[in-house]
Image (cartoon, rainbow, N blue to C red):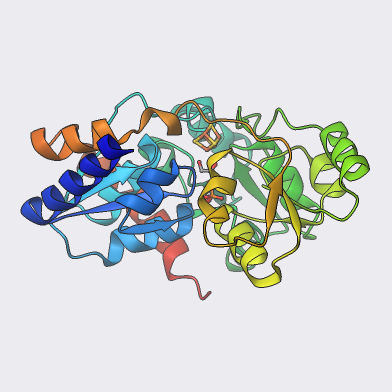
Length: 307
Ligand code: 13P
Ligand code: SF4
């Protein structure tokens, strides 16, 4: 702990010297989330914060597609990621060329793309969405284009979960989050049997039978808000392990139990490499203009939708 406290102190000093802010996703470890994050939140919240911030430097304590999103929204800022290997299995499941082929196959349908994608995929997109607003975005796109079907890529499970909540038809892709696809309905049954009073929350990247067996489905921020508002005695969060650790400190009366999975990409980010990132101003994330411009339109459309 003294070593961690010293690192936190050093990072917070470096931030001031570099005119930097740290945008930390909810899956960061607690020492990053609570110790050095200037803004913490889900993908949607961090994207909005990137657009709002007037700092010169953004350090993305999250994965690479999040840093690209920040750069797309703030081209004049220096965007850094502490480890270039912080990728994402969903983002890796599809390329811009794949999206062009899908568009040829379904001409006239709007393309709604989850933010967990690379910039070249966003550049082929009409509007982005996150797990917090996917249903709203799909319905907006169908109305705006005057169609009854939209393309929603790349997460197969998010697409199925959205399809269950809307009359708009969905054309999906086969991408998956390697963290959330591993949860099963049996995990939920076992939790119900062992802790009958526990409230079970699951992320929409989980298979649909997991969500059907859960009490609440929502983005990482929506899960935090739900638990904070309701303060149940026992909670199971079907998502990445750091979520429960990050919330537990603020809710001493709530017991967090049950299974969780680690995201190996999020866990690439550490206090040490955040410090090195600010000392050496590494690793800069850039997006070529010809990709950034159409991608910005897609992300900005999402950010501009009413809450
Ligand atoms: P949200 O924070 O938007 O719910 O996304 C979860 C996730 O998997 C990010 O990588
Ligand atoms: Fe990607 Fe899943 Fe990790 Fe999020 S949790 S970064 S979607 S692999």
